[in-house]
Image (cartoon, rainbow, N blue to C red; front, side):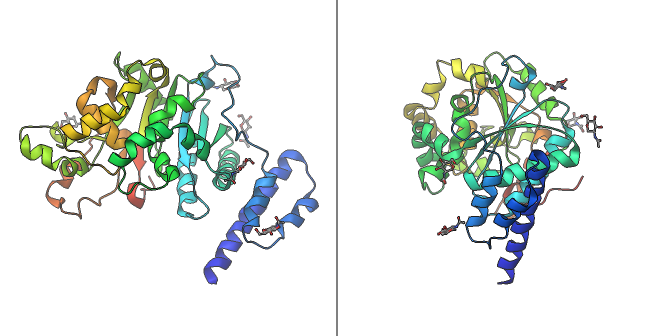
Length: 364
Ligand SMILES: *[C@@H]1O[C@H](CO)[C@@H](O)[C@H](O)[C@H]1NC(C)=O
Ligand SMILES: *[C@@H]1O[C@H](CO)[C@@H](O)[C@H](O)[C@H]1NC(C)=O
Ligand SMILES: *[C@@H]1O[C@H](CO)[C@@H](O)[C@H](O)[C@H]1NC(C)=O
Ligand SMILES: *[C@@H]1O[C@H](CO)[C@@H](O)[C@H](O)[C@H]1NC(C)=O
Ligand SMILES: CC(=O)N[C@H]1CO[C@H](CO)[C@@H](O)[C@@H]1O
């Protein structure tokens, strides 16, 4: 009871806040909306909230106004879904977007893959940040269900190999959306960065976009190293048959620990024009790679990127570990205490914290 009253109070407060913002923006009279907001909770609350947020672009991504402006360059993508039933996500999203907007000196377009209920929350959070920081940001919303259908072919190939428990098409699709981002993003977008929402920036995102200048001629993705022994574990069989291999070894020891997909850079233009990429995500290729390395993963897209980095390293541009300083220590407490430190070591300045597996992020 106490809990639900708490939630009621919070939701009502959020509702009122949005209402105030809305009224400020549109000069709508207070009273007419206050009435709707006195409706007691239940599911109706969110539909009421939705009604007062101006309609966003659900149907399909809207083309950006002018293709050659900086707007089409600085595209940041995130996935923010299922949030009403998972409220810690709201706080994480606030921390993430606040840090993104605070440090940014560029005109960003922020693309949020979301569902109807989560979009309302995302929109409120971004507006609050915008007021607080006195900064504007362009936001585009995309319906996750629609994108999931669009990428069904990729999900079908990946899911049996890289999901711990393949489930609904929808939850699986979330795991693999990044592998088809070039099909989702409008053609004006040449570059994009995708960030997990359990992250916090300490640096201007512009600096991360500068990494595209360092991409080799063939690189399609930019990725940061995984900072745990998870792929030492997953590659156990392969490593015991190939004792000399660097695959699964710690980054700080010059090895290849795999990639973490909390931060991904996409050369969208190359991905769209790549004659090879469709083949790379095909059943045959993925089957070949998983068999060759006796690989059974559970971490979604990053399992695929990790294998791709072993087979076709020229397609991935490696990025400084300081851009994805992962904080999860689960593997240390799960049988890898002896080697964990050499995996988690990253001696470059932290530009982005990643509070994965619900790990709190330092204030600084
Ligand atoms: C952002 O866009 C505005 C208007 O489009 C422009 O005046 C401003 O110079 C841009 N800022 C940067 C840093 O590009
Ligand atoms: C979300 O909203 C859109 C547009 O308002 C609607 O077409 C769609 O059916 C809604 N989806 C769900 C799952 O409620
Ligand atoms: C907000 O920023 C604008 C320029 O973007 C500036 O003109 C204005 O004074 C700022 N307002 C406050 C309260 O700082
Ligand atoms: C990081 O480590 C490398 C070698 O281990 C060293 O050469 C480099 O100076 C270190 N960088 C920093 C910022 O400490
Ligand atoms: C005002 C409003 O939308 N009321 C609806 C709240 O939800 C119940 C059950 O879902 C509907 O029956 C009401 O019409």
